[in-house]
Image 1 (cartoon, rainbow, N blue to C red):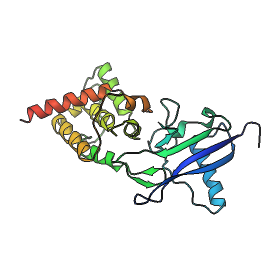
Image 2: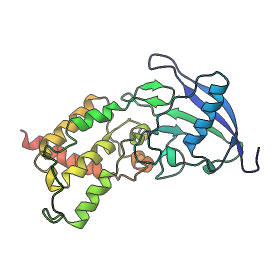
Image 3: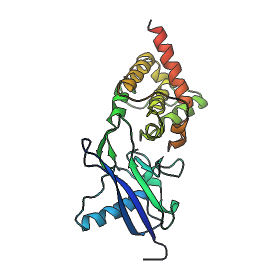
Image 4: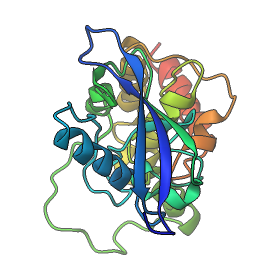
Length: 253
């Protein structure tokens, strides 16, 4: 083992499928480079497991660039781990020390059932988007940049909300498993722009209703969602969603 390598103790949740009982399994892993990403460390573990004839640990990943939102892991009790504004795939092993014990679990929420091991089903987010997180318009060519003037502050707020990657860290961190930060971000990015005004009423009512139907909890303003979000989505979006919802509900009477 080189001087730069570490020995790590892992406690990982193993579960065959959603109908099976799961349990924590202990692993010892040597030759972990501080320059490895967290997912590369799991790749190393899986290589060792496969070589020994054991079942590898199932976990979600895709782009490994902090964009897709697939790498949804609870690491030592924190969504995406100890480094703020960082997805699991962007987290590096230099954030840990030689000999550390790392506890790795899936995101836990009623609306996020476990597929296997660390993989969860987050299609509930897709259903919320399908309930109104879009604009019904012909795409065509991009319009001229000055065709619809939008104030700089408004444009920046919309872009900040659009930064949400739908990873589910907000749900996993909330004691009520609330999806209000995710839903409000997807609603806000459209509610702030002229293109989203035409369907604003149906969007607010549809997305909030679907969110409740899927079993997500309500917001208690504990702000754990904002603290754990790897893209820094702010609680102010929830306030905007509530305003949009109440305005739509009152106009519907």
